[in-house]
Image 1 (cartoon, helix red, strand yellow):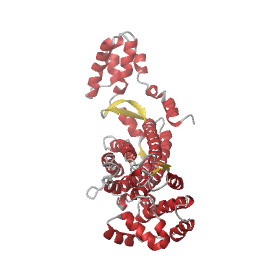
Image 2 (cartoon, one colour):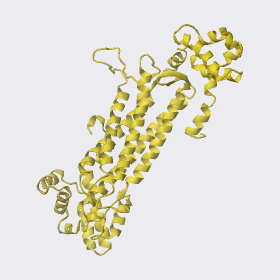
Image 3 (spheres, one colour):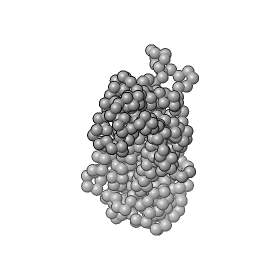
Length: 435
């Protein structure tokens, strides 16, 4: 993660001071439970909290100790003992490093998920506002990048709204799945620590108990979490790519807001480039790059190895910080998006009415023409228009074979743009609800 693509709230989750604070809370809550069970003195548990609850941990000191011990948790516990004093001997009773590391990571990922869910709400709010604003704004729908049939710009945004509604649901599910706690000791058997300690720590940290851990929390949970981030990032890129296409000079149906004093090119003063959505495309690639390593982390040796550790130290911060930034940027792009209905109408009219070809095809079959013959009749009048050699409706009216089935008035009726939008209200109710 780099400052350019970071927001402080998400970054703070991954800062060393935050991590050590969570480590301390896990250890201190475990001490409380051990004290209640009579394993350690109650006064010792109270002293641990009293001495270190508000402590600012010396990151440099911990790093110094780790350079000697080559073990991060031992380095932290040594520094904690320097703060707490003799009662520190009761810290970490029956626990193993993974109890602290894995529970902490899941706390961090759950907190990150909370931010990402809130970010998604911002995107949804922006999409809903703009979708209703352009609910009936006609524009051309494209398949294969080619003009197909009319849609509305509101429907394009409603599609995105539905997609990000699913994204939010997936993030909520991913948060639930990742928010587990393991305080089960070496190889996960609870041989040296009572399962009730785990239950106490889980409740105190806002987590649920991991049903069975083999010294580490199962990494299929983490794989699903990062896979979810990857899917959400792809949704960000899909909408960003749509906007980029719409901003192309030959299309120009919408474009990113261009602020006063903004410059588009160091060489060409006229340029207004889709830099924000291009940036979102790149950021989505970074988030997705975390998915494969997370999947590979599922496979560990026996009850535990640490091949996953270095990976998670990188992808945890990078993927969550990057997606947080991307979602906020996307919300801003949608809120300020410049929309050009006149250009949308101009593009709709570019093919001289060819976008109504399916209606003509159906009308001919309903009047008795076989589908094969109807297709040929429509296509032979469409191709000259495609080449810029006439107007579709006029050519149809001049075609004697077409006139065997359809009158001029019936031909004209097939070019009603509003016909294509008769179910927009139905779609909007499905997406946004009756309100």
